[in-house]
Image 1: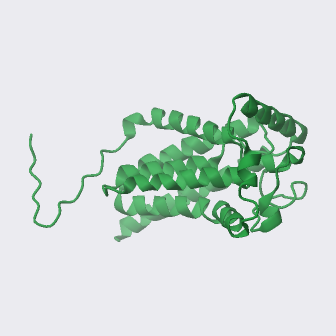
Image 2: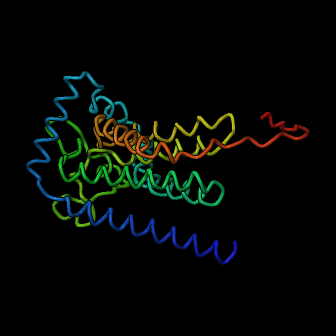
Image 3: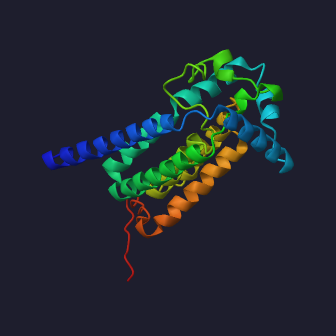
Length: 246
């Protein structure tokens, strides 16, 4: 990498670091409003039952008794979200610059929109609705991401909607599908699919949190539709010649 290339990479790294810091500070600033967060949580729970969405409780209970799967779900929630997004961005920056800029801007819009919802609609996650029978699998089985809400000064635990775990996973999958040409690139959709199941069975999000993230993401992509890069062109196979037809 040339000197100018390293400088550009450092600028991008600094930009992402600043955005992440702003996200964390703003998320903490949205903390509080505990009573409102629980009222909203019960409203979401009732709305899902009215909409006849699958029950989070049934999904969680189907996993109980399989300790290795519970721990795997907790680990996926704790350790895959940020690293997968970071690795995707680094790879795009190195090999697909146009897709990197598009994806970075989508993430900025999605995360900014999510922060706005966090301010307007504080929401306790289903693991806190103990009257429904939901359990905090992270605390019970580990690894746990969050400490007790009353003493946790690092994260805002009343910001369940939208689920940025699901939103960012969708961005990663869409970016890699758009930026690659392998016939199996559709398998990247397994990442958001697994993430959706994980956030629900661990008690960290409602189904509607994922739908809200998808809706915000659709808005972000619509706003940036004029910036979408051209599809990746497959490399010719050995002995194969690509003929350009005007």
